[in-house]
Image (tube, rainbow, N blue to C red):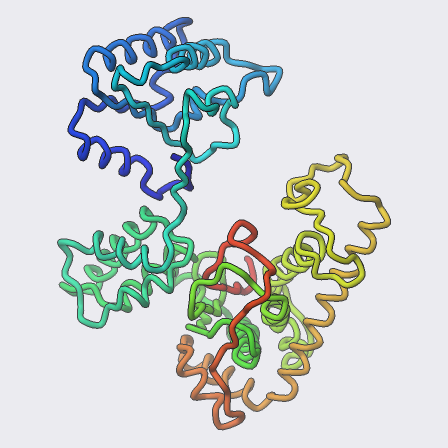
Length: 436
């Protein structure tokens, strides 16, 4: 079983043992590795001998990457670990199906496992345990809420929509944090606002009363976040705005949160261009309202640049370079390229990539600036409301902007193939303010 941490691989193995009703031998990969030579291999032999004697039975090895790593991958090797792996391979080789012993294993690092371990005849089947989708998150939440007092205003579908990318373990932690928040407020029930506060704490960090902003800093953050929200509201293909706040939390001085109506698996070029404009609008609004930029756009610039690079290099969304992918899904993965390593393309191609990335970013910033300049009165109204109330919802944002320009909240479907879940995790979009 292969999957990210917290998706329930070990729980599935326990469920298999319960359903099968046979002896179940559960161990971790690290329990085989010892300082003394030969101990790990001896434990493997004893394990399989016991399993055969008590057949039918199930052997489950959790975190098998501790002993199953690829051999000969570096100059520094662990002879004891390799001997243990060799013994495991020998025990699993030519396994007699009539013995009634089933071997299961789990890892979240399948890419480092030795190929000999994964060949048919040893592990015949690989089962992927992915992160849960929206419907599955709602079902998992109902399991973890058992035994806790829940207020009537909690909507599991809404919570599931607001937690994209959360694993089962993350959702359990979310409910526990929400219960702690409710107790701190002397409440016997968990309300929707408790879950929302717990989610912000998990994603952003704890809000500290000592991390207060100066008046001019508060105004700058309000300008920054108001632009994110307004550009998102005015962009046709952007996700709806869920919340805007200028209360510092963790390293973020302010947050504009967008939540998709539906959990997307593919993204169109128009959606990505709107995302660039939303990220770069903060700097544009500072230039428009304050007259100069600040360090508050650092994380926005980093995120926008990374997105533009992937659009040009990985997804073939540049008319200058054409339909060629140079990234992780193409010739090589250059996202983790070290200094001095050669690229899978020429230096002239790198110059074209830089040129196209710069063009996308400049066009996105100009578009955001034009939108904000055209709706300057609405921007000032949102800034004033943020300074007064510090946090507003997406519905309140629409109410504030409506007198200045009626907004159509419908979102067009996104039919164009541009990005899959393997490229970027779909979910909430958070834009942080200045990083201290």
